[in-house]
Image (tube, helix red, strand yellow):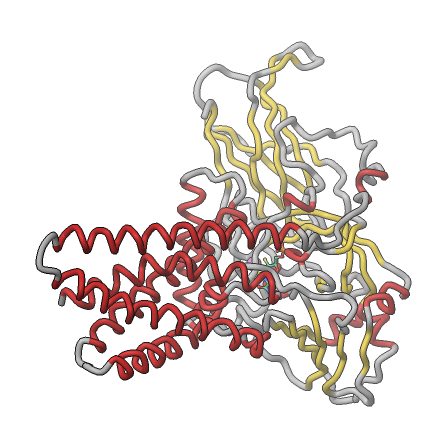
Length: 518
Ligand SMILES: Nc1nc2c(c(=O)[nH]1)N[C@H]1C(S)=C(S)[C@@H](COP(=O)(O)O)O[C@H]1N2
Ligand SMILES: [Mo]
């Protein structure tokens, strides 16, 4: 038993320099970081229910710790998990290697065994999108590590068999291995970082919002200070997707392919798409995993080409009824052609707030579909395929609502912090927040304090029919501790769902409550 354990320990130590080497090499070869590839593969592979549970759990923990930016923290947590998985695999490699090598005498066979185990364990980390480069890198890394381990096993044995000062010899070996590992790790990370800083992708320029007033700037209903920003800065917009690092797409070689049930396959370059008359729309995008009052929701100004307009230049065959959108990360979703033809707001977007999409948010092209959660709206689109029937998309296949229509919700962002003197002379406590109902708008927001009646809040004119609405309420102040609740009604007067439901499978519902003072 000592053998495999020692092997696992040495594998654990060596996983650090191997990861650092991969980090540097991945940058230089422009392939994805192998530990991330393995984790992404696993997350696409596991049953949807497990992944959903994992995401819910993570969002829950992050919220409990009141993390500022859930989606960013979640990505960091996932990346840490990916590294942990990689370290674990290296420990397994060490254990298997030591266990097997104990049964072979000849040095040649030991080395052969090392190579076999190395190749075997390298398979899950290969990047299928850059197979050649990744086959050049990953197996050699693992084989190198395996051979090093075989050699170390020999050294370990010698150290153990030395006539005297056994402990010391072993300790010296460990210190040597650990020390060189640390140095190599540091070097790999530093060099890798240097290689990254040279990449610098686009994104330069001035956002639209820095040069233009918002369309509702003159509205007399101003947000209560402490309400979230009405227009989310793009770098503060939540990010949710199935990747640990976003697909890096080169605009020069990228094409939007349109094929399937079409008379003739078409390809569009980004300049060709930009040459169409652009359409602009203020949009609130929300993740279906967003809990009531969560931060997986954001609003910005989308620019793109109307999908219905683009389709005029593609000859669809009569039996085409749906469009399947394929993304560079192998994400996919399907949309009804009737809906596309009926809704001119549906666009293929290439800009947010006047700037090209960032790599995280779908550069170079993503779709906007009003009234549905983000899961229905692929980023990094590379291909649109005309098909003749509905098909479940990525998250639908994993158990989420096929329609994924945005739920009506209202959120209290801020209470107070203190009562203020109103113009009428009485003391009021300002309360403010947002309400959102996809593209169905908000007609009414009501606030209830303690067991009092539901009272109307004032609504600020929204940026568009497809964004959240900012509301505010002046509560006639009374001393003591109070509980505040808020509820919303959509444009048609339909009340929000007040029964609490978790995000899975159809989006979170329920009344948001807060007490004051906190
Ligand atoms: N290609 C691709 N598109 C995707 C996803 C993804 O994983 N891959 N995630 C979807 C989900 S679940 C959401 S909530 C939105 C989030 O968009 P954002 O990260 O720009 O806020 O992207 C959607 N589009
Ligand atoms: Mo999402």
